[in-house]
Length: 194
Image (cartoon, rainbow, N blue to C red; front, side, top):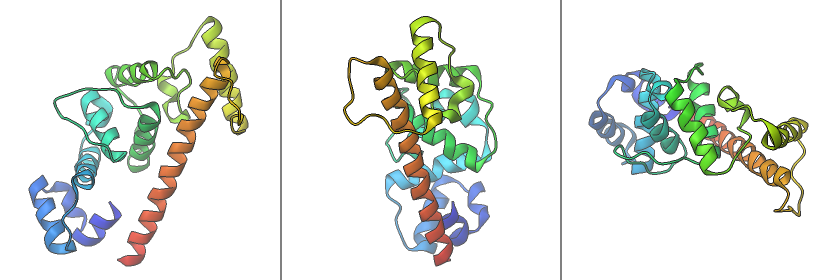
């Protein structure tokens, strides 16, 4: 967004996709690779509409694009929980909005079930299911460990559900933290070069 706005002005948000591509080539002197162009299209959709919050397919495609992953407009698949967490963190950073429709929330829960993740990244807390019984105890313990900020044990006991779930929750936290830092460094370089 920093590079496009600095090079093309804020008007690019209203342009058609092919106009954006042509202006990037003409003004910035580069042909964007497909993964970058998909991020640009996802970014434009996010900034102009509420579809990220209102449509599970647009949500998924935006999450995949923000993570630099390919997507198919005709196919719904499951994103990894850490990819979802980063996509939502990035979206909320760009637009202070967090009220997802039930279909999107259910998509997020389904993806977490698919990957066997009980405890969601904090940015997804509003979609976090409340568990009963043993799963509830595991989730509660993992949430306390996440709040403590202690990294997982070096020698993971794969038979210990708490350790496994904590590692999955920690993985999402570290993944988001790493990508957010990369994004800040990119934005800083873009500002310095403009």
